[in-house]
Image (cartoon, rainbow, N blue to C red; front, side):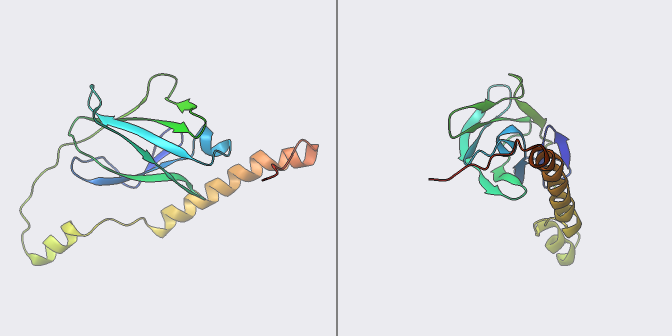
Length: 154
């Protein structure tokens, strides 16, 4: 589910006490940063403030977050040189819905409810295709014009 500005969650809605995977393909991923941290908290006062290092993958930087509150998830990103992506000083803010406790009707249903949701293969492939198209659109004109310079690792 794409919500805003190259930020994706692995679920349709954010629910309190659940774990959500955040994927970030914003300016730090596009500019080739090696390390990105997510700086996050909950509610207007940014309670339970934390900062986690995100894992770099071909689909962007990713991290799993435990949603602690029923209010909002607030976050921003910073890279290895302490540059910030904070949505033009607005921060990224997403509502968290309260958890509805429902008694399972039978054992079979309780197994379905308690099993974690996995990403569908079609979702993963759609992300890979979008990333490939982005790379083609971004780098092919640079290569054709001769403005492409490969970074040399020391």
